Image (cartoon, rainbow, N blue to C red; front, side, top):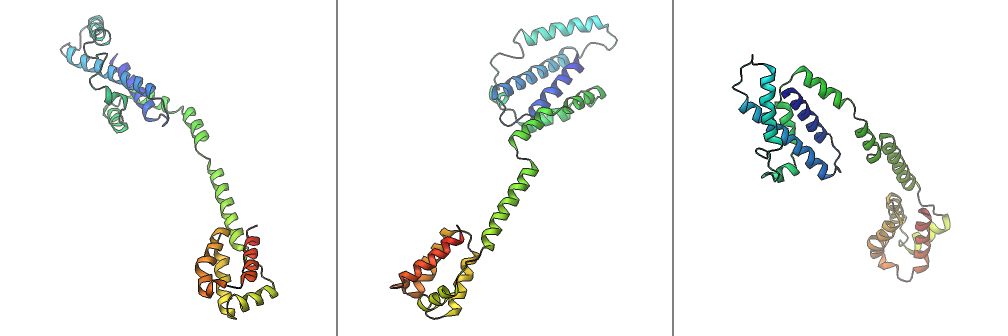
Length: 229
């Protein structure tokens, strides 16, 4: 009987430790309550049967245990319907349960039951596949994201000769160096929105906000838009 109770405790504790995060609290409560009840039975056995000699007949031990078990499970003596530690039972701590498992006697029969129970984790595996992306999918997503970013960054602005000469003359005060610097910076920006913000906030103020140069500014903005099309 004692061995069977301990086996059940091992199984219930393992079920709670390996449960999904979205497990219904009602189910967890019932499992925790079952653990509490079985521990109460073991405690009563230890207290009430400790004086029974080892060589007493099985019938005597069984009869005495039956009385104790009935007192615990149906007499509401040690396991009241409204548990004073209900809050602790409803939200059992994982570390407490793990400690409970580790403190139990390591008998061969118990280890075998534990091994057999843990050896069938199909439901855990299936839940992981449903909830957690597979390594292959994550890798594919990362490659796609990396490829898209590289494609964007690798797509430099295509500026024709006439536009380049016009931009240098009218937008950058005849400074090819300034034009080249701004173009290089634009080619490192990964979005149209950020590119436009860079022009408006960092470039235009250096050149009198390109007043009277709206035609050339529009042509430059069109090239930026085309880059991300």
